[in-house]
Image (tube, rainbow, N blue to C red; front, side):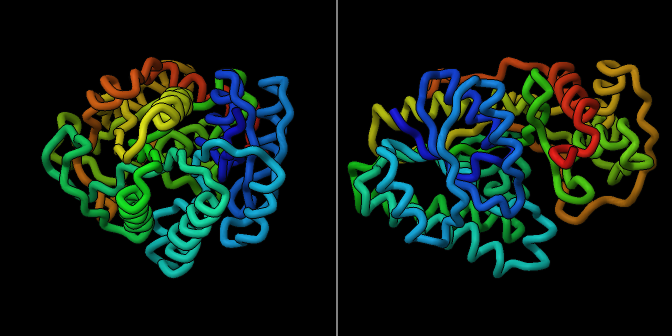
Length: 337
């Protein structure tokens, strides 16, 4: 069975490619490489010992997509391809709406032309916005607060409308919380462009000497240690969640949303302490001002994924930190070396 993975060279996409091959699926990858590197897919093939076709196609290029579907017997799609920097989306919203929403529509139209009705969509916990009630469940109110989150929310709505119009479609919307870590081999991992926006890649770049110190954005939140609490989940747990979701959509019709998280929150200081304990490296830090839009606490309700997908996160914070450090230590410049 052949699965088309869009954005397969990205952070979560590349790890999911490994999990899919290990689960016995054949792959076809489409990636424009706008914010990823082909080297990631070469390393996926090294890890798995399997080669698969890779097409350097932008999703807005429907002719290019048609050629992929005509060349390969695609039976289902896992859709990662998207721009994902929140700050960049605020500065350049039109680019985000055109790429993330327009590219998704182009993909779905191509799927429809070729009779492909099974889809796993890479959504995000940002669709919930600044909710106060925790944990966040799939029934929590939606209200994204930035253009990136709104693109994910819009694509979710498009897919709900499509499934209402086409009852033979089957779609899983996967809302991830805070993916971290790397494959245990150290061969693939998170390689952000520029200064990292997320905590753990920032910590690992401080540890490897690329950045001078960690800035903690506020230590006066109403939490036990004053720093923000988030639900950090290992990227390989997320990847395995996609395999479970794929198996679900292959056997059902309709559309369902699922949170992928641990169901537990860890504060910024707890993550830093776990990293230091796992690696023996002290992380220099300073406290800076709060960032606009940062909620004090956010963590997932995960019962639905456990009950309907048979999935739950298995790896703990220590393993997340150790794997993230192995990747960074062995690849100080990411895929650039």
